[in-house]
Image (cartoon, rainbow, N blue to C red):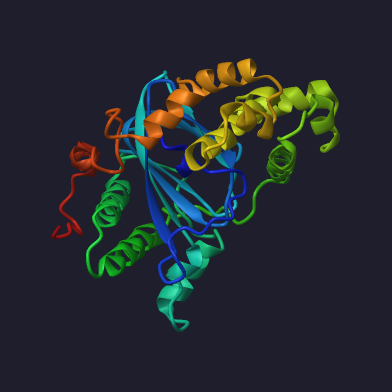
Length: 327
C-alpha cells in the first residue's frame, strides 16, 4: 500500500479543504500486511471494507469486519486495524469534519439530527453489518457516497452531503442511534493512558526509548505497562515503535533522495542491517525495493490509485433500490 496515506497518531492534516472538509482514501493490503497503527484525529470516519476482512479496534472494543461491512469512528476515538486470518484487504476510508453538516441557521434538522450527532448523543453504531434493513440502507448510502468521491463530477459535493443527511435520517428512528456522549471512567482512563504513551513515542522515536521510560509516563511498572500496551494495541511497545519508525522511513524514501543508511539513522535505527530486517518484516520488501516500486508503479505492475476498484462497488451487500442514485 502507499504509506503516504497511512495515518500517524493525532493527525494534524486537513482532509479535503475548507469548503469541502471530506476526503476518501482507498487502501489495499497484501495478505497478512494489514496493520493500521493506533491513532486518532478530530474528524469522524467511516471505513468500508470492500474485499477481504479486518479486525478493527475502536477505543477498547474490537470488531471483525468483512467485505460489504463498515465501521464508524467518532471524532477523537483511538482506532487501529489488524489483519484477520492473514487475508488481503481493500477498504475505503471517508474522513470528514462533523461541523460540515451544520445548517446555516438553527432549524429542525440541526436540533433533531445534526447537533445530537455532533455531541455523540445520537451517533452511528460502531459496526455496520447488513443484518437489518436500515443497516443495509446505511451501507448502500455509504457505497453511493464512495461512488461520488471516486469519480467526482460537477455538484458531487451536494450528493455526498445529501447522502449524509439521509444516513442521519436512518438513525433518527427510535432505538437505532447510539449514545456515546459519556464513556465509562475506566475506559476513558485506559484510552488516555494509551494516547499519552503513543504520543511520547511519536515525539521521541528518533532516539533510543526504553520500556521503563514509557512506563514512567503513565506511571506503571515495566511489566504492567508491557501487558497494558499489548492488550490495547495487540503489539508490544517495541513492535509499535519499530512500525512507527518504518512508516517515517517510508515517507522519506518516497519524498527524498537521501541514502537509505542516513534515513535509517534519522528514524532511530542504529544499525542498517537491523533496519532492513524490520522494514522487510513490516512491508514485505527491502527499503530499496520499496522506493523503486512506489516511484514506478506502472513499470513494476503495482496498483495505481483507484483504477483497480470498479468491480468492487457491485458487492451484494450493497444492493438496494431505495435512494438509488443515477450514476
